[in-house]
Image (cartoon, rainbow, N blue to C red; front, side):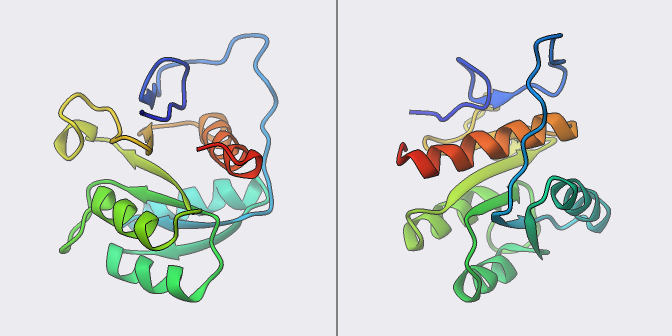
Length: 154
């Protein structure tokens, strides 16, 4: 079953604007590993997550990410799908979840169809946040994933 960032969908649409009843941003203090090969995007994501109160650890590629996961207590992996190297974000997510089953994962991509199921939806058990996204959308996706972990649901 596909975990969804928006009800009934496998991804959160970047064009969806919260209505007047939108909930305020909810941050946290959990450790999040951001895996992004583009330094500018990685820096922007780090800034947003830091402003939301999260502890941010960065990696430039999947190999570096696996090394960080082995050394650091990380609750959520936030990874780009399209990355250079032997392993893309989906493969990284699967490898990380196999080794650390409690780890939550959110994939992000501006080109989701290129390495996903062909229809832009995340593989079963993974969430997808499509680029570009706003801080509110990022905050909501993270909180949904992290709260799912705390309540024991998967």
